[in-house]
Length: 453
Ligand code: UGA
Image (cartoon, rainbow, N blue to C red; front, side):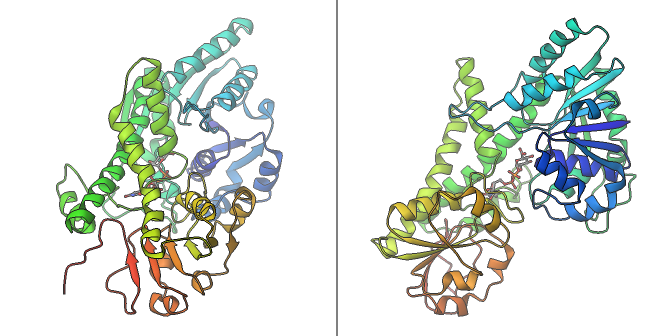
């Protein structure tokens, strides 16, 4: 099977490189010429652990182009992985998707071709894509196509492991089309490929479940999954606030409830709340879809408002100890929305820096990989870059740990804290272990009352 991937963002690139690694001939298409030129030269436009190595090992099977005429006619399966960024009203912007689908339609060949929606698209989009294709087919007799929804569940930072060893593969569409995709994914479903040395098969991993369903249910599965994960985090954050009131420790509480297999521990880490390109966008999109039908979604609204509250809470914790922030120097450790990525979308650090500047504080920020991207994307923010975490803390009145990069966990805090002007630490990711070896004020989320030793 020949494969074409339209859109080389996080999802498209990961999918293209993974399928090429499994042995397929894959053409990656993007309208951004600079991106394609870079990829042809072996340069990745994003930071994702292990992707560079996998790209190198699969490069013989990969072809990059900006031309639909080159990429579409020979393809048996066409994955659409273009971005669907949020519009101000919460609905996703589908203009990239529409233009991609129209360009695909112009170049269909007449043999049966499968168009797969991998982008997270609003419920009902698969049918809308079909209508665009039908409209086109009415003018160009002979094109034969099917649309499948095959949502992506990978996380940035662990994208390759998630792609090679998924929990499940969801396929929504006709029996014929989902059957063809089952064939395509056979090496993954049966786990017959040789695991790349740098992304070993997790211990105990067997194989993914395959869910074959309708287009619309597949689309719903993706949104409902993200909404549920977002909800888990907000639930943990809401309980964390009550833990602070009553003197309980959220880490111990979530560990305790997570042992019930119906609950499970993942995605119960309390802290600055979720960020990134998915949870905020997808929960808002789901609420908007409900609104289109006059249907309210109070649980999701509550999850979003708890998440917003977490970001304010971090600044309030600083104010509790520093009082006036005007003229104070605050170090922000971590800019990416989570560790192991350079993605800055909806990162809590963005809101911290914005608010601190509004309050008259000066900000020194440091991130192990996201600083070059921040130089381009955060030009509207006022902050000074530090060369290291230690350098950021030097002379600061306070520090906010915004992202739980492992180098912040292993930093020699006792030493670094001694170089601060006043020692206020707001650990918004609960990564520091108590007690600290030096006198300092430490604020965490939901665990301000450590058990007396
Ligand atoms: C998320 C989902 O986890 C993926 O399954 C999905 O494919 C993806 O969205 C998507 O729709 O494309 P991602 O946004 O890359 O993946 O990152 P996550 O690891 O899910 O983290 C999301 C946010 O939640 C981060 O800001 C993280 O810091 C936060 N988080 C996560 C918590 O605050 N607490 C937790 O316990 C877990």
